[in-house]
Image (cartoon, rainbow, N blue to C red):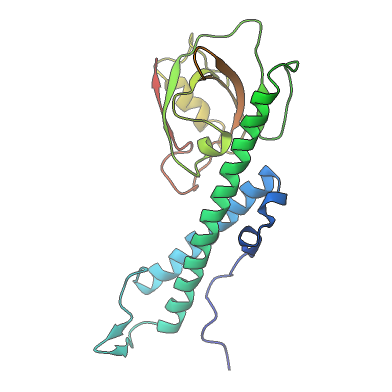
Amino acid sequence: MDNIHAPTVPSGPSSRPITNGNAKNLSFAELSQKKDDMEAELKALSGVLDSHGVDMDTPLTRDGFPRADIDVAQIRTTRSRIIHLRNDYKDLMGAIEKHLHEHFASLEDTDDLPTGRTGAGMLGDSIAPTLDEPFARVNSVVPASPAYTAGLKAGDEIRNFGYVNRANHDGLKKVAECVQGNENQNILVKISRPGEATRRQELQLMLTPRQNWGGRGMLGCHILPI
């Protein structure tokens, strides 16, 4: 007899390594991939609930008995998986945030090193002989968004966004064009970040615009012209 408790969508890759402490051994790219996998599975599981016309809070009983108009066993299994995934996702985002904090801490410790260092996904301090004037300021960043993953923070001042700078941004219209034309492609973003007293950090970040990350737009941040 078929197992009536089996979900109608694949359970996807196990997210258990996040809860048993192995996330610290993963690279930033691997953490990002896990995040994408979890988001995809959560979306699929949500589709299962939608197909039954229910959500996480819809009652599954009527007059004290399981409802006959829906697959109660399937819905319970799907809800349970969603709850587990949400908990794992929270732990995963904590690991990603810790990774980013450690990265920026390492940058502060190596301010005296020669410029031009590169790394996967995020580039280190790079103070060029001449810097373009900032043309935009990051007003807010949504957690788990592409902007958040790249390392952008509220208050960052944008000097360059790909090929866009102060001379050609056209009221940020060129930024929108750059994003639309580079979906799922790396964009080099040069920023100036306020620090303690008058000290500032000059950083280069790799930002990858993408759809379906769980929020609006392809960046997950709000920027304003300066």
